[in-house]
Image 1 (cartoon, one colour):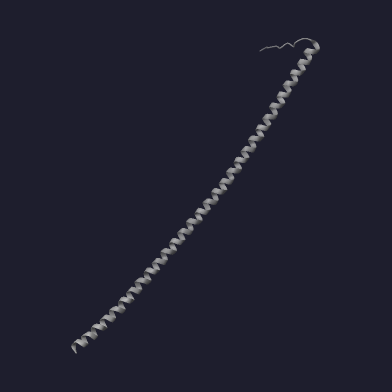
Image 2: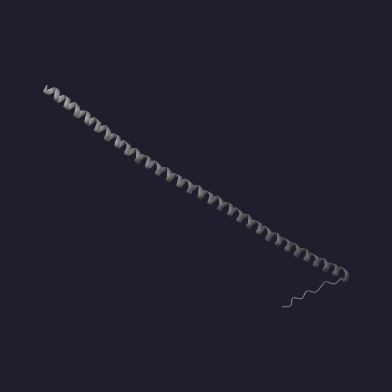
Length: 121
């Protein structure tokens, strides 16, 4: 009978130990699940911020690229305009000099005398 009482008592202690163990393991599991979800939330937040920052910088780069392209096109237009004006001036000067030469040639033909060039300094 002593053994039976001892085994009952022993069984009672084991069941108490089992229930304590289950409770302690459940607490640990809950605590680590909370920590895991906190870490996951932090990770998702940081990833979202990084993604938004990357998209913002990408947008800024695209805007900067568009601005640079516009600036380049404006420069080309200005260069074309200046070059066109210079070409027009050169062409006008060429026509003017050709006209002078033709007038002098006509004068030579009509008078028979070569005009005198004076190189006075």
